[in-house]
Length: 573
Image (cartoon, rainbow, N blue to C red):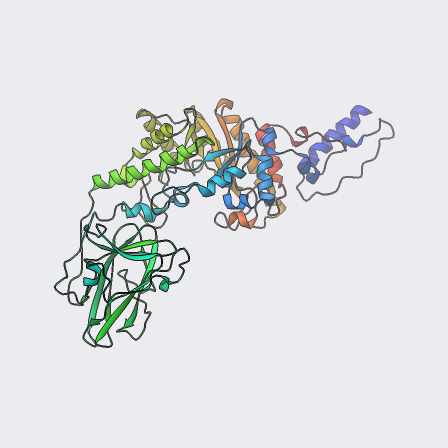
């Protein structure tokens, strides 16, 4: 009878493993009066017990088990950090190691935040570098500032200028009032737009209001009711902010003005390149007097060109002449910025980072060639290196990363939708071949795999076959599986779990073991904090919003190991 009982138990175990996570109670098990007693260890676990009995993900993996995290959320500790530390042996920082957050408006790299994160990260968890050559999350403002017209040649308006500059030109500040000098208002030589004098104004450490750094001009005699143009050139050592207010000549002392942008606003911005600030005003008296208010931000140094600080009748042309940089000059400048970024980023983190996404998302969405922007530096945090460097930016990126890092670093090219657009997958492989034809080695290919519960499994399998045929290390780099709702029902959760199983199984079966670099899942849980900027209205992860394991956790392990969950645990009930 023992054999009969064991057969029945085996059937029951298999049935129990197919139950959804809503199955919560054990069956009422009784001893067989004709057979041996049933021990508690032979009673099958409920779905919840089975999930709880499984070990951490990394205990079962023969390769890198990775996680993409928001660095700032991890630094807060709690459930997210606990799940990361328990389950994964490599971390990818989702945002904070990209160009935008790392590079300041002065072009210098800001390491402090990531360095602090590395200090917190346990030494037995690796850090994967993401991403060097990408077109998004750039400091686009800084990169575009490098290719603005080569030099302003301002109009010489001295014959028409109504503003007395003598107190600035002789350094006496006669008739100029330093009402709030901040950390200093002085005249400096050789800092003007054409190498002449400049008015230097420095905000102090506590500056927070426009008037915290303020210089008042002499009184200008004007015609009541007439329109005048105020024009000057300004730059700063970092991002700055200023305004013009009025002591005389305007009924509104703090008017919104069109400072040359086409839209009236409270203030204007400044950066490391010279910028013309220009606006028109119709005066309401026979005197005009201005305040230069630059105290909005702390510890900013501003330079205003003295020779081209003008108040003239509106009929006078104040347009400067701009000399556009040539394509060759732009290529050199952007190439230098590209090299500086990669060399310093890889060099700084070489003791902690031994694998990088060197080029990210280079293929256009049609899968026909290189992705491009508007050819002018794009907008916001978008900036396409390749618009200025051409296809060889792929080669350059790998060369720079190889030279700056460790000799055994594993360097990846990475892209998305390779499983849904096989032409894109083929084109990415062609790029790998191109890079290597130019003498640079590509170690691995990453396929992001942001997919859904009902994605095409045959397409996924075929993309794995194509990638495996390259002989490269293959990494699933950003895996998540959408369910198209933030509150999926048990049936949808099971479909999601089945898809996690299938993806893991296909990876294990199709990618040769020697080429299996690993799998990185993107975000830990369905908690809203992790999805403020990614899949906001979905539940795509292995843990739910309360950081409990989902059925997807079990199925993912089963697909990855090729073993049913009850063989992955040891329990005594």
